[in-house]
Length: 287
Image 1 (tube, rainbow, N blue to C red):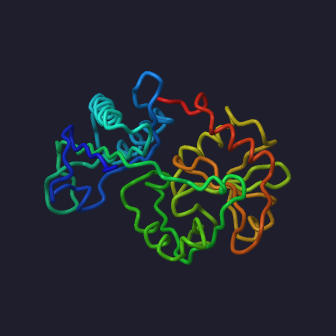
Image 2 (image 1 turned 90 degrees about the vertical axis):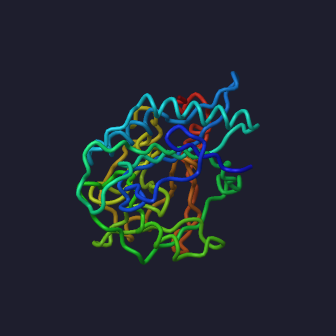
């Protein structure tokens, strides 16, 4: 099926060449899964969390967009997707400062661009959930930015370059470090490792993205499988001493890791329980 695009409420696939998102990466985005419910309506997983993160990022850089428009546009594009016969897929939202001005200086009173895209589902080999995936390390280091660290802004060149380093036929994902050699995340995922029933994940402060699934796990309100969940600085030798590893994002949810840098890991029973938990509709905070 073809992709569907909605730009400022219109079913078109073009934006202005003067849009600041295109020119300067001046904006934020979210990627999420949606599916049709028993009433024939499209519902988005962890919708309120995605909107909260999008709003937080935009507020940091003084972009004020209409939540009502965003909600209306979401309904409009998912209605069209359902009417076209789709039962599920991926929804991407992009908010930019809008079109106008030359140079970096902010232009007052621009109308933000609100762009929604519907893509087909990403098909994941079910064996990955049972047997795990292979990871490798990337040579590219993540750039630090304390002000924007943790946000999902449109400046993703670090991830673009890192993702080009490895062969996807051999490795599902590449793990990236910061300039101090500390593990941060994957090119498209967050990473966790388990040791002595304590779950560890890298601090995301100056660099990286605080993913939605990562946040749900770290909050611990819904996850009670582990004695403790710790956000900390992690070096390569720390993670290579782990018992089990898994990676997360909003599309795959939880993927266990079979190997990292050729070192093999077991899939802990608690990680299997976590995979099952994230597969239940009532857990996904549909909105």
